[in-house]
Length: 417
Image (cartoon, rainbow, N blue to C red; front, top):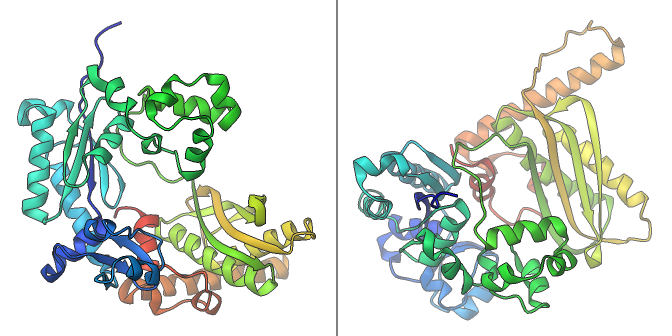
């Protein structure tokens, strides 16, 4: 077996991006604890994080922790612009860039070494140019694999650079908390802690049978591979999404028809908007209903005609959720509702003629779908010009599921543009 591949993978990640962007746009906020959001913290600066303020925290709690905290509503178009400018800097060093969100990307710089020097020199130059040309702090991890480069960039934060050479991989990973592994969230971390597994090194040394028992074989094998830096993925352009979805946590709510229609209408609007934004439609619709105690059921339907109309998707999702609840009559409350679509295709939509074959009823159905599609396109056009909150269906506008600004969700859900 030959020598290990060189550490030529970079993971570039903007630090506290939304908050850092606000501090850049308004210099009076520089070095101050700030939070993006109104009723809920969407993002916090590092100065605010030092007081314990974190994303998802209610505003009242954040102010308790940090009385001097400044709240800003957010400039979402500016976030997109700044994110795109950073990606332009990355592309100046290598054409092999995989953007994975508005504020992070992977780069393969093996082919750029002759022009720009070793990977550490490239990473240093990238960070300097992003700071000088865009004005934002950027952390970079350099390693042999995508997973390790991402871990390294998290260790480098804030505003740092960490290089992991091939002969130091095991030692570097061993002492880090297991939560830095891709896919290890609070629930998995708690499961591992019951067996005394708190570091990546302890996870790498854990018997396979133990992990199978704790997490199941598939997840156990995946995490073992990442803990030992086995990650064969290569960097490439982002692939078209094979599915899209949205969900709303509800606390504990009585499963009334009004709650289903309002929440599922809100979720369907988000998913359908993303489909139309991508020029796609979907044949399969899935709804997940979660009950207290983390019990959940899913119901799916595969359609003859792909859909991307908000009202049509709302009706299908509401019907699926109603069927799930009808089969679980003992469940009176729900804690989460989710809508997802798959089997995504390029729609071959055509306005039907009144005398289309299939009978009058089928013709009327297709005309109704065409009318809904036309209305949605008008809604999309108004939102594109005046913002997402400028227009919408009543069930969506007045839904209490809409706690996070739609512009913020769009940046995460639509991806880079």
